[in-house]
Image (cartoon, rainbow, N blue to C red; front, top):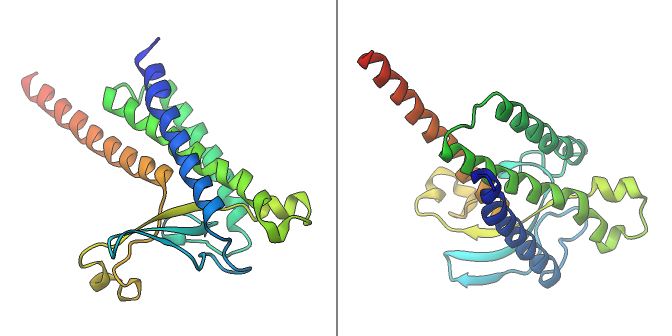
Length: 200
């Protein structure tokens, strides 16, 4: 078994399962947002004024961009497929040779599949669309966001937020960590190349 296969088995799969369990727990324990809305009226306080467990339907991407628009559910259904294709292409070109890059790819795969699963499945579970057509229910697919944290000074940057960072999930966290890992791995590789050039 290769290093990357081990990463898929012991990192990607467990995190994907955790992502789906937490999302389905959220869907089963918090009511649907009202028709036309994106947030459930009910939430749990895990740590008062620090961490709330919420239920937010996100049909867009980060910070809710595209949420509630007619085009977002369809467009963002294909974006993950394009991302997976690009990862495959870059992998074949040897871009992800560094071990840290392989860890990042394993996290990216988890994040992409986690949110793609939501977009393909969750629209079919909405009670008020149970009699709608297949395509309507598919177009109502959304990503389940449930982690809501309050950040110091964030209310100074976005006063309307009350200090609460836009809600997210386990898959989003994996993508965020992967992006930073790739960034720092790239910086390290560049530094090593310059060092070798100086030595040569």
